Picture 1: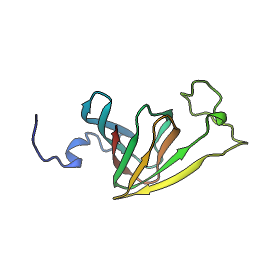
Picture 2: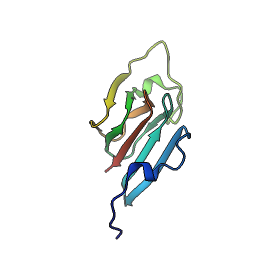
Picture 3: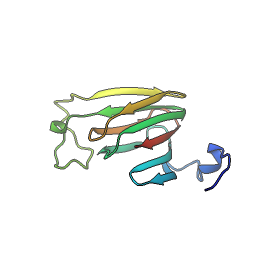
Picture 4: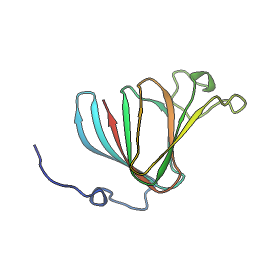
Length: 122
């Protein structure tokens, strides 16, 4: 096992890249990742197979939840929603806030500012 203190800035290799996902730990179905998104960058609509905890370390993100009826493909792996029937729920999560949600929910993430967050899947 590795024991050391890590600064977030040490892990982000290219500050100009739109999106970076850095694996910190992984064990069976549990994952810990550091995610860095530039302003307006998005993680496309998807479904997580695990319960999720997000802790924003810098910036502000928007998490958008959709019903599967708003998606044109099955199973959903795209970013196409029925624009006339937007029954989405949006949550803004900012620096030093946690956000938790259960698995099997259709969602996307968008950076409202340059942002970094810990993505914990359990």
